[in-house]
Image (cartoon, rainbow, N blue to C red; front, side, top):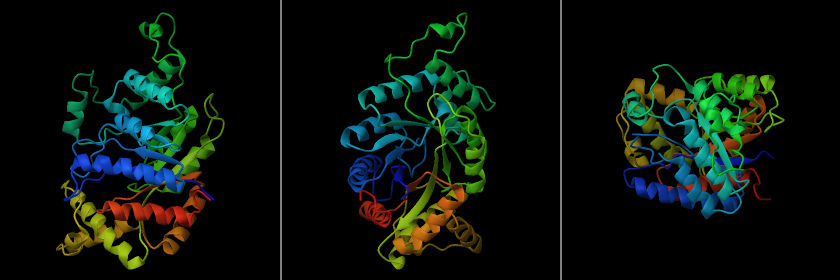
Length: 335
């Protein structure tokens, strides 16, 4: 049976503060650890009222300390926001403290709006162009001590010394990161939960173009999906109403905390809103386990995913834990 993992955005709701959302993430991580999930990744987003997860390295350390078996990582660190040396140092420190349990997932986007992105990079040498590849190359050269002797960075030793950078994954919602991940022999995670690009196209392109590297001999592809699972289809549909309203608001440029399902169900949607909701629902897996599993299995087979990673933007924390428990049972985790 395919491994399942968790992608956690630490959702903020109209009844859950940002601080409580982070504490809920710790509770959910312990829950996932006990259920038999494979790994637990936290996101990096900024200036979004719905998401409390802005500092993945801090949360990774706290979650790894609170669990015993899970691999813990970033889904992901948004590389445009950080100096590569800083990323290398922090994740080597995490690997030293929790050996064999840390993942480094890297994203190409800033994870925020343009103005906030400038604020994040204000004291860096900002380049208006996409410099993701330059930053990625710098990270790899620092790790491999690959700078030529005459380069000033050749003298930099990333501390703690003698600790390898954790396994590297590139995140993407299209085929660009898939091809880059394949070319450098890294892992790849596809964001089906918000992508408009075909998941199979990106993931099969990654697998076809993969070149073995010193750290990974075979391709490894993770499929990230949005799941709203409950004991009954009716209960799941009610929970999913929160996400419907959230998607409609985001399409309008409104970024607000997640609403209670009752508020979402009573919302006066326009015809355009309902068309958007219907389109977004094609990317969601909503229902009882016996409805979700066949659909998800079909997508896993089509993409040849090695692992499925579940995110669940559900208003009620207890219902979110139940969602992960039901999926764990459906896939016989921990058996």
